[in-house]
Length: 507
Image 1 (spheres, rainbow, N blue to C red):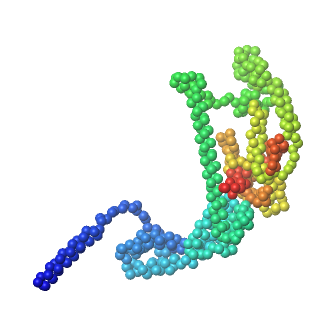
Image 2: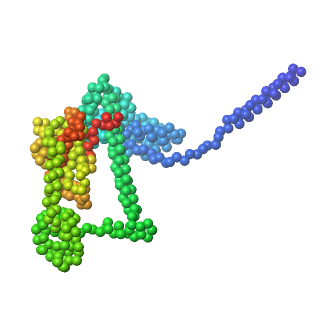
Image 3: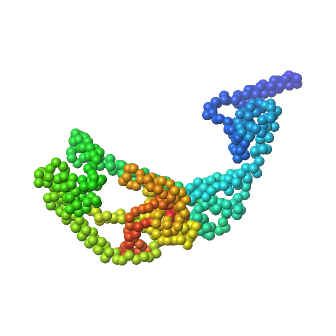
């Protein structure tokens, strides 16, 4: 009985063990492989530049070295990726499986030494040049090198690094750094880097904002023009709308007749070459034109055209109105006298740091004046600071570059850096105008004792006199004073934002 019991127990255990193994086989059955089609990546190449070794080996290690393939195949891949000095360094080794590890260690010892890469990075940091216009690129290059040094374990918190960074920055940025440094003691390289990064970010936000506003204005102007073209007060039927649109397109494409007196592009009544009535009548007599319709083939007494003067409502051509000039002159003088009595004499006083608008206006039907951005600034020669002068600056973001008058450049004895022929395209002209110019460096001292260095182009003539309105920090509209002055400096979009407090604007 004892033997039979033992056999039964043995059979029962054997059966349970078989069932358990079957369950485990079902449980751990591997799932079928899922094929993922990744894009084909080409192997990197290495020419012996130590700066590129880490990047090369990281890619090669993932693509080839850690793969379960024969050593001879890895060596062939490695040979195909090397060129230049790196290929010459291993040219004496046979392509054999046992040489793969030998060649790999040789390349790592020769090019993978961190001290070599660190020295090259410090040399690159030293070689970064100061660039007044491309200061954003300078800061980004400095930060790129510093991040790589940090990745190699270099400690950047020492005065030599701070001095090296500051030597690459423009004066106006250093001025902001020293002010910020006093408020945030103790100072560190990390705080300096964060400050420069925030300066770049705020500048990018301003540029994006200006670009968005410009695009919005263009879109708004285009929409208004399309609405004007679609609007048809002459009729409501589809036929009349199409007809009016066709007539409108013809009118807009028709070229206006030039001035009958001087053949230039302006109205006959606005001719500046023949300004008096006698001069215009004599000119018409020479040209043998009618004094009423200003055309050929007949004289005034034979003209059937009925003309009414726009200015005095008499029966003659508006270009031959003898009363126009006297009326315009009297109106202009009376308006000037009233303006001087209302505003009072111009008084010089210290202006606030705000930029004031001014403009050169002409008489028109509208009495509203449009103001341009102007400011009295102090400028001086960077190499001879004693040569300084107060002048009026026009801030024009529509100009790509900054300009200075030849008169002011000579007074400050500024050194001309580069002479070239510049093509300037002002508003209202299709063809750009070529003019010789030279580039100079100019320092501006702001009311906050900041020094901003500019690179401007010398030009003979900027613009006419502009009206400048003076105010103090606290002013009343009725107490405003003004004066007229010709600007000698035009600050364009290349330096426009350096005169704006970026920190306040960012907040």
